[in-house]
Image 1 (spheres, rainbow, N blue to C red):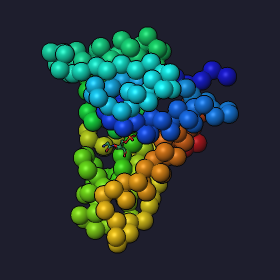
Image 2 (cartoon, rainbow, N blue to C red):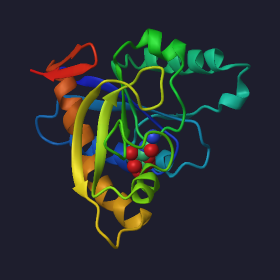
Image 3 (cartoon, helix red, strand yellow):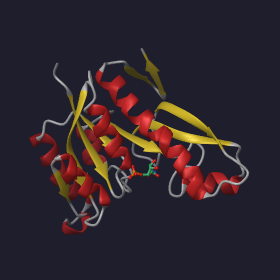
Image 4 (cartoon, protein in one colour):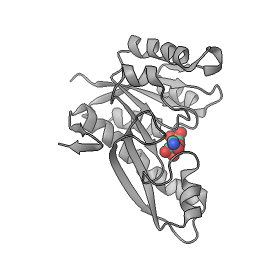
Length: 202
Ligand code: GAR
């Protein structure tokens, strides 16, 4: 079977990346994580990539005159590796026009809240401050906005009275690690159809 070729973009820990790699190495997986792009030199995710033996590139936006030049450099790596799907996993930057044009509806993101609630930074803290009783995670296609693209899948978790950002983040993360590989599998099985804002799972 020809496996779908995935690049993961990350800025930090890389636990979602690790969950994807593990899923991709299980029996009958239909995708393979072929490349990591990272914008932070000290990101623990880079060490994980080395342990998994997956090519990883630290590319600092500061080395480029503008976002277009930065993303053109990234695209050169993506093309070399024949990447078909980009998965943002704790990548703390917005995709710009270069990436969005070259990979239309081929960029996914995971967010630790039930969008459209609590987009942007510190989603778990936002949920706790608001006082919701249920939160969760969302995998969505990426558009030009912040966490605003069409929703592919969501998982809910209960918010407990004694939760803090750490305990809630942990509970959500367990669901993230299941949901993201599932969404990637659906993508490469050809089951995701975008109709306006709605993603239909065939
Ligand atoms: C995850 O919780 C992910 O949902 C979140 O960053 C964390 C990265 O963890 N992403 C965002 O908040 C994006 N808005 P990881 O590096 O261990 O996968």
